[in-house]
Length: 113
Length: 114
Image 1 (cartoon, chains in turn blue, green):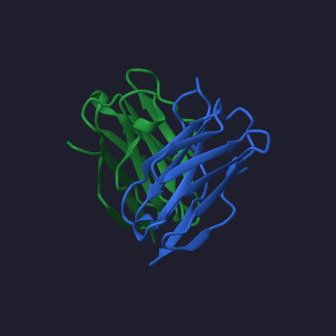
Image 2: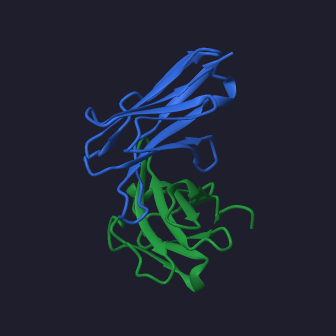
């Protein structure tokens, strides 16, 4: 049972445009959400997170939006750069439980120069 | 060290053999996690160590899998009698506290069972 779903396996955007990566979850107990970025042959690196008490968190070119009623979050990258080309994982957790994260399958983003 | 170190980076083994995967976490990090990523799948939680507490083994897929963490530092993930479905990238991560942003992943061990 996939509790965190990234239904689009890939996304291709033009440099300078906006990239929107989507993520859905099914477990209403999740209250903390993260995005990780992964380059080939490297481990995932933390990108940005959001708590369920917020609906938006912004860090430079990266913004994460959370819609709790829809159990949906999205990562916006503006403007997209070729160096953003990577696999992006959405992850979720329950505060107070151990630090276990539940990950989606990932989205491969390609930013065309 | 500066990061989480995993060895070997690649491992090819014959079906039925045992393998050991090693993880050296960041010095001082009390929490250590093992995940695996099978082809086309997300990262799947395997096991979690926090300080001297009993590990959370709820993600281990079968009793062929075991892990230990010696001296609160280095961890070894052992897979006995490997099967082809065990082929995956095994990722280790450590963190200094329960903060998820503090997760630092290693580069992983790519295990191929032939």
